[in-house]
Amino acid sequence: MIGRLNHVAIAVPDLEAAAKTYRDTLGAHVSQPQPLPDHGVTVVFIELPNTKVELLEPLGEGSPIAKFLESNPAGGMHHICYEVDDIIAARNALAAGGARVLGDGEPKTGAHGKPVLFLHPKDFCGALVELEEV
Amino acid sequence: MIGRLNHVAIAVPDLEAAAKTYRDTLGAHVSQPQPLPDHGVTVVFIELPNTKVELLEPLGEGSPIAKFLESNPAGGMHHICYEVDDIIAARNALAAGGARVLGDGEPKTGAHGKPVLFLHPKDFCGALVELEEV
Image (cartoon, rainbow over all chains, first blue to last red; front, side, top):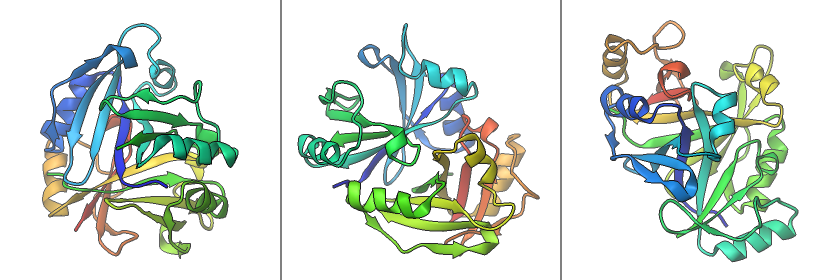
C-alpha cells in the first residue's frame, strides 16, 4: 500500500531559527517560509536528494501543532508522510482492518495540494502517520 | 553538508507487532529482525522506494532507547539520519559552529557498518539527528 516516504515533519517553536540551523549549520537547501492559514502552520521545506523535511511553525489560533509544542517546547519530530496511489482505497482497507483515521475520515487537501489523511499514532507504533495521494 | 535522508527510526515496545503493522496493515516490505547487541537494539528495516524506516526494539540491559520508551510507552519517532560524504569534516564543521556531538565525539560503526555520529536534539529543532558517512 505505502510507497515513497514523502516527508518527515518537524514542529518547531521558531521557524526562522530552525531554517537557519538547516541552511547554515547542516548546509541543506531550504525554501522560503510558506504560510498555510488553512492548515494552521507556516512551512519551510528542506529539499534533500531523495525526499524532504518539513519544518512547521504554528500559525494563528488553534494550530494543530500547538499542543505538541506545549509538550515539546524545543520542537520535535511530529509526523511521517507516506505516499499512496489511491487514498480512498487505502483508507477503506485501513479502516476495515481496524485502524483509526483521524477527523471525519474524509481526505483534506494537504500542503502540496494533494489529498491527505492522518492515521492515529496509537495504531502505528506511536508515530502520527500522514498518507498523501500522489 | 547533509545529503540523502538515510532513514527515520521509530522506537517500538514490541518489534513483532510493529513489523506486522507495517507489513500487513501498511503493505510495506519488511525485513527479518536483526539483533544488534553492540547497539542495544533489534532492528527491522522497512524498505521504501526512496529511503527506509527502521523499527527499533530494546535489546539487553542499558539499551539506548530504553529511556525513550519509558517516556513514550506506545513507541514514537526516535531519530532521523542524514548522509554525509565525510563524517570527520562534518563533525569538525558542526563542532566549530557550536553544535554538540554526543558521546566522545568519535564516530562509531552504525547498524549498516558505516561510521555514524549523533547530534544533540536541542541544537537541531528537538530532533535527535544521526549522521552516517556513505
